[in-house]
Length: 95
Image 1 (cartoon, rainbow, N blue to C red):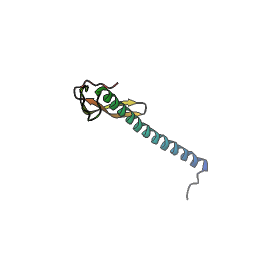
Image 2 (cartoon, rainbow, N blue to C red):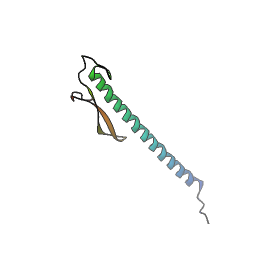
Image 3 (cartoon, rainbow, N blue to C red):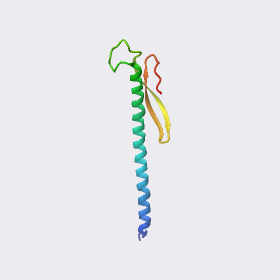
Image 4 (cartoon, one colour):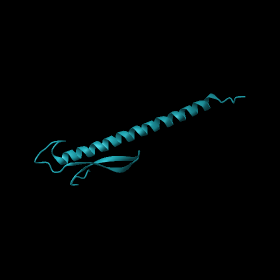
């Protein structure tokens, strides 16, 4: 014989699951967007430091691009693994 559960209990479980799925999805989206923001900011700061654009040749160029290094950054939304832009002579330090 099946147990009959009052509708209010079903509704409470539904609301609890809905809240859990909403906040879980929201946290993941915030982490992705924060990661994009910090990585883009690092690249822009490096480009400003370099003076010349990507693939550009100029006498004013201070240094050369040299890829990225990984750093863990702890936020209230969780730990983010960021790709931080770097320069060859290591003269560039992002803020």
